[in-house]
Length: 181
Image 1 (cartoon, one colour):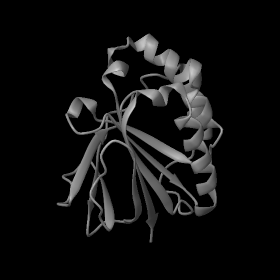
Image 2 (tube, rainbow, N blue to C red):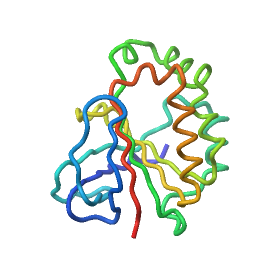
Image 3 (spheres, rainbow, N blue to C red):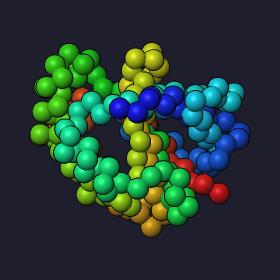
């Protein structure tokens, strides 16, 4: 496992990403802002709100799944990837009451979360940030980057994921769409 990387997403008047929309899918919304700043390993700038998470080991993926993801996914920061989405998610208490193997069975064996995501590689790059242990308002922050041409595929992927058994455990989700100038 590589060292965890703390990452902060700060909404405000400055940042490399222009906020196109903030759409609450479930639960409360986040305040509207013009820009989003993404910082790694440093103090975030002041803003309207900051969500902080950390990269971590793959908690629900098997070795074959992590190897498959590594072989097919391209990295973040590609020049053509001028669109992004930040999707903070909180799972309900019923999810956290399940044992790890029960969560794994719902996550992949029945909902096919990783398998669905792999259908959209390499066009969509993603990085998951865990934040439940940090005490913030969300359990996970998922960052996606893609080209404008891949946005319909990204929307299709989200539709497929949101139709799974796993999403019955989502208590809060916000879909934040962004563009890089």
